[in-house]
Image (tube, rainbow, N blue to C red; front, side):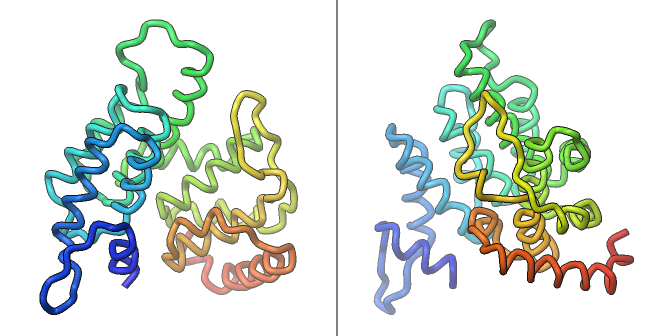
Length: 248
C-alpha cells in the first residue's frame, strides 16, 4: 500500500483499463529521472521514491542507474541519496562500489578544497551505512564501535546509522542511551539540522523502534515530545528486562 501510494503521487502514472498503476513503467520513469535530469533536487527526489519499489521492480536498470549516481561526477547530495537508496533496495552487487567510495570519494582529485573535505565526510558516511545495511561486517563493526565513542557527535550519528542498518546485534548498545537526556555537541565543520532540540534518548527510542519493530527508517527524523520520549524509553527498558537475553 505504501509503495502504491508513493508511486501514485509522483506524476508518472500509466493507468490500465482496470485503473491500476503499471508500476513497471513508473520504475522506468524514475530511472530516467534519476539518470538524466541535471537538477539535483529532482534526482534526489526520484531516488527517494525508488526506496519504495518492491524487489520485483529492482532490476539491472535500477542498479546501474544508482551506481552511476554514486560516482564522483555527481553532486554530494545526489551521491549521498544514491548510497542510501542502494542500501534500502538491498542489491549486494553495489557493495564493491560502496567500499570504493568509502576508501576514496574523489579518486580523480589529488588535493581537495575545504568544502570537498566536508562533502567527503558525508559521502563516506552514507556509503558506509549503506554497506552496513547490505551486511558488510567491517562497516557494521565500525558503526557499533562509534556508538561507544567518546565523541558525542559520532555516537549520535552512529545511533542513526545502526538504525538504518537494522542491526539487531547493536540493540544492547542502545539501551544505556534510554537514560541519556542530552544533545550531542555539533562538530564545528559540519552542518546539522535542529540537533540542539534532539537528545540521545529520542534517537535510541526511535532506533529501537526501527530495529526491533521493523519500523521505517524515516521515523528517525520525526521529533518526539519530552513526554513521549520518556514514556517510550520506559517501555523499552521494561522490554529489555523481559527480552534482552535474546539480543545478548
